[in-house]
Length: 78
Image (cartoon, helix red, strand yellow):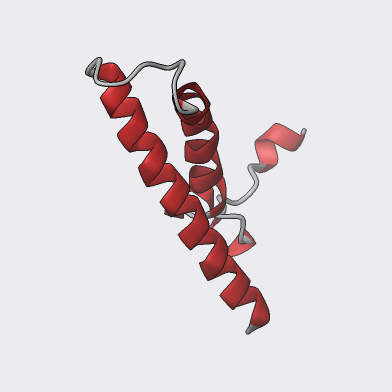
C-alpha cells in the first residue's frame, strides 16, 4: 500500500515537472522566451531526462515484470 502511494506521488511530481518543462520548451521554440532568463534553459535541458524517466518507469513500454517480457530465445544461447 505504501509503495503504491509513493509511486502515485512520484508520478504526480514527474508529470507536473514534465508539463511545465514542455510549456517552457514550446515557448522557447516559438521565440516567446529566452533561455537565459528565469531558469528557462534548465527546463529545456530537463525535458529529455523527464521523458526518459516517464518512459522507463511509468509508461506501458517500460514494463519490468517478467510476465510481460518476451521469452528467451534458445537459439541465441547456443
